[in-house]
Image 1 (tube, protein in one colour):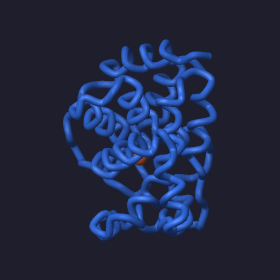
Image 2 (image 1 turned 180 degrees about the vertical axis):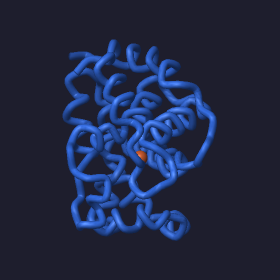
Image 3 (image 1 turned 90 degrees about the horizontal axis):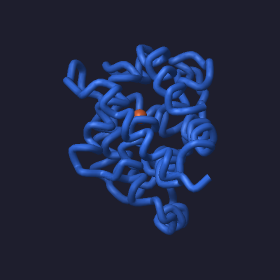
Image 4 (image 1 turned 60 degrees about the vertical axis):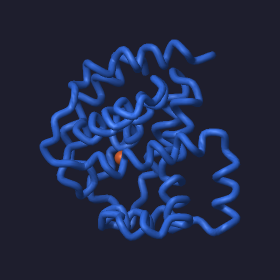
Length: 183
Ligand code: FE
């Protein structure tokens, strides 16, 4: 996959609903990237924010798979596909964004209490909150902080009807992040 194909995939599959929330996959991706950009995140982390749920578009499981007890492991699928093009600064926060939720649930009770109901449902499938040992090993990963930042944007990027820059606006970030890869 190259940047052009990734953009086309987002355009083609982006109108599907974002897991039980009131935004589409593409709206969710754009809102997440905008939150990253608003916080002056790196080009790599803005790219990660835009692409973190690409894994949902790389399989053909139904949108309501979690209702049937199926965890699509979308974070692994996306990280694996994107590793051919992007550096770990993009793919690691993506791979870890579900673990970051399990981590935050174990260290931040307010975070756990504020999760949306689809997110609580998927948390169960994803293994529930980390125990103390799992949380410590998560923190040891050099990309843990980026993964937690991405996770917090992810949780906020669900506002119906919010205006964001179009996908085109983020293409230069994707190209720059791809060029920064030492492949
Ligand atoms: Fe997401």
